[in-house]
Length: 302
Image 1 (cartoon, one colour):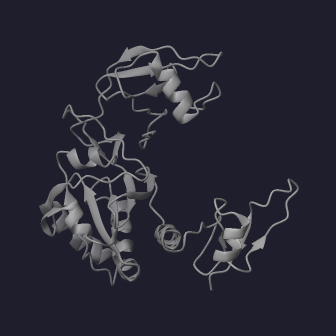
Image 2 (image 1 turned 90 degrees about the vertical axis):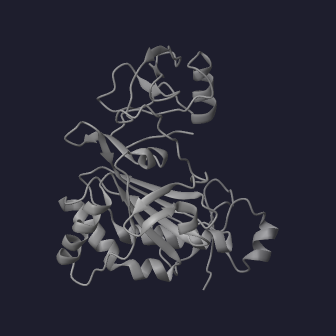
């Protein structure tokens, strides 16, 4: 499964073994990497295929679609020497233990039987982050109505978090930062949650957290992830919309179309046969298409 971080200029492919010619087969079979793979302008030599962040393979894309391997020694761990975790959809997040503005906690115990949003920000006492944390605090009730717990994270200390909260609440009238904020000065948690931005560094050259946001289910598994660079603030209308869609899909076994909002028609999953769809969603509509295939089906759950 790919692990693409903010600022990354290539596809990062975790390998099951040391870099070898098998990398091409893995990339082709599991990730569909083709000769027309588009990468950022900062990439030199092709796409990165990561076995780890300290021992990696550089994978140039040849005109024939093959890959050649050379050793690389990039390390985005901020000097800790540990490797970047590859947190993927459907994967259970580790039961991390940490200090926060609410005291010492463990992630799984914090989540309990609820949904949860774990979101990181680049740093305390910074402008965009102040607007974001104020906005999400102001809308905390909307998350609570959906049974969702909020928890923030950055590389700052608990003391800095506590002092900064006063600025956040002063800037956003009516906002009360009641959700905990994790202190992660070691970057250990951010690495394990795949939240570091290798291009965004502090005065000591260590990477800071990106504007990552993970939506976790009651099973502690990653359901959806947003990743924004430091220059772009998040849209919490979209976060709430995504939560509505995820919870509806989990509860009613349906899918949601583009720009769906609560109350709109939903998609009948193509995995259901026509007979199963008629039984589960009586009165659903099937869109006639030039292909003649009856895969685009909608139903109203009102």
